[in-house]
Every structure is written in structure tokens, then in C-alpha cells.
Image 1 (cartoon, rainbow, N blue to C red):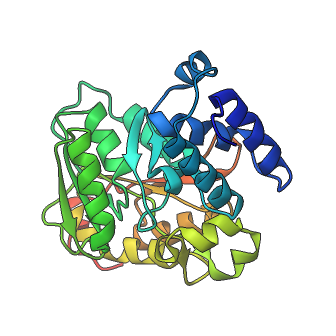
Image 2 (image 1 turned 180 degrees about the horizontal axis):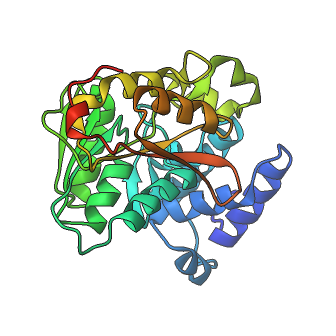
Length: 291
């Protein structure tokens, strides 16, 4: 396999992974990753030969992909909301459903609305909070995570993307002070008994602590509802990503804690219920009430 062109290397890799039900799109990502190319650049350089070192690296990546490694972890990066984020096994890989959550927040708060205080709880790579801050530079955005390793990744992403965000280590709301107009979170929400339905690559490589939750996946929604009160005002909106079968359960949790709240369950582009918005509508005489 010496002196292969990019086209020949791609052809070999297609044949190799298709024998094991791999995807051609993954091979293209790996080839582009060798030199940081776009799809157009790869097409323009198909006849160019890989260096010996590149060929060794490419073969290693293809084998790892075939063994179940996500392409994003092999490359150390993932695309999200028009930006490239560093990822590793300490963070989840940002997914399209989460981008829809970001879009919902931005649609509700047009660019002319300035200087909102925003908190991204359990930020991981920082994808949600950083994307919001890049789209709305005047917002004061704080990212929290209980994992120091995840926060290190988020810090790198914030620096690379020149996002002016604050990063705080702690469990859910613990490191926060004051009230926020927008709070957003993609917490762990997969029930432990749902492991049998998940891809092997996710189970073996993505951090379980960021995936699974007790109480049939609802544990963190119960905690958020119970602990959020000191950080909200009458105008606060909470945005959550949820599992596709959790819409009514999450709505019930917040209605029980906040009877005056408006809770909206939103479907993603695939038609699944994957997002919830809570508008708290708290009156002044409720500020010290216990629900």
C-alpha cells in the first residue's frame, strides 16, 4: 500500500469498512482530517499521494474506526453550529439535536436583546454556551460542569473560538450566584436499562456519567426543578434537551414544582419530542414559597 493517492486510499478504505458495515462518510472525514481539508479540497487533491506518515496514520484510524471508535474522537474534533470543537473521551460528541436547542434559544431572543445573563449547566465541550455567546456577543455566558477534565476541554474551545465565557467547576447550580434570564442544559437523561438499544461505540467510548441517569433517566430533571429556584426570576426561561420519550414526564416534574410555569415540549426535525422550555412566570409573592 505504498505511494497511494488520496483517491486510491479512499477506495481501499471504502472496501475495508463496508465489509464491516462501516460508513463511507466516516472515511471521507478521516481523509480530510489528515490535512484539515474541506470536501472540495479533498476532491481537488485526489491524485496527490499521501506521505508515508499519513498513510500509516490513515490505516490506524481506519482500523480504530472499524473497531468501534467514533470518528470525532479519532480526529479530536467535531463540527457544531458552524464551529469546530475539540472533543475527547471526557466529553460527549455534540449532536444535531443539541444544535436545535441552541436555535430555539436564539429564535426566542433576537440579536437586539442585549446583555442577558445565561448559564449553560453541565457544559461538556462548551458547545451550547460557546455557540450562544458567538451568536450573541453581548450576552454574559457562564458554563458549569462537575468534571474538571470536561471543563479543560471547554476552556480550550472557548480560547480557540475567542468566546468570552466564564467557566466554573461544580455540580449543577452549585458554582452560580445571582439570577439568570436564560438557563440551558443537556443533562444525562438515558435510563440505565436502555443500554441495549445504544451503539457500541457510544457505550464504549463516550463518558457514561454524561449519558446515564437514574429514575428512568429523569434524575437530573428532578434535581434541576428542585434546585433552580434561587437562580431564576419571573422572566427566566429554562431550555432542556430530553430523551425522545420523556416529554410528558419532564413537563409534569416542572408543573409540580412551579404551578404557574408554562412548559412547552418541542419536537426535533425528526419528529421526536427532544426539547423542553420552562417559562417560570413567578409572581413576587411566590418568591419565598416552597412547592
